[in-house]
Length: 259
Image (cartoon, rainbow, N blue to C red; front, side, top):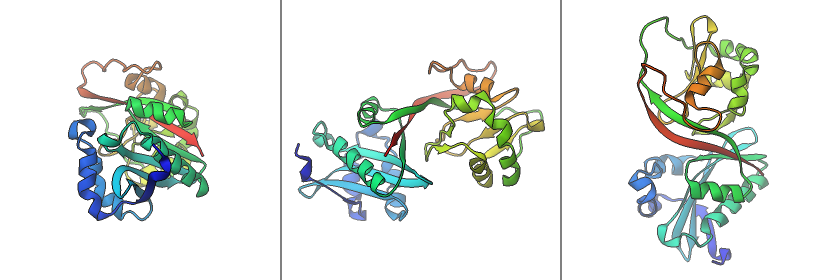
């Protein structure tokens, strides 16, 4: 297609029905975009964009600044009748150019869709970390983990920084809402939101959140051992720990692109 035909504009409340049409066949009708539609269009700190051709919305995408120099890319959707015409590529290229113009040095995203991965890699994105998230049953007994104060969480960084697990996770917090660089400031931010638990005698650190956040944990002797229980180095899911319940999730790939 001639990409000069493509026009990007903010998504409007009137685009709700068209959004439902575009996303109805995504993930067998379980796409999350309709659920966040109202929140996204009301978020003045992000850009929820519609792509039009001759006045018809054919695609969606969202750009959201979330940390200094970093912008999160999400919600790329193209109507089924308009796919394989270069629309997704044109939208992505426009998003990268806009992020660059606004002074962001890196765009990050998370996906498990293979065609999307091929598109992003062809646009210059590189894999940062690949994870498999899962849900496990709560284990009762023993001294419970506690929520540290933000200042205390910040002081944990020197010990955590030397852990092999930081390298294993590419130095980021693989959060589906924005993969931030792991640092003392990030530990403090997570603790302020109640998203960190410290084990007895500071032997372990767990950072997690509600809903569909990727698992990242340190439990017991070292962060490295826990990470290996979540996923082995070759990207294959590690065996479930004996005597613990849980359900496997989907493998998620976090990617970054310098703008």
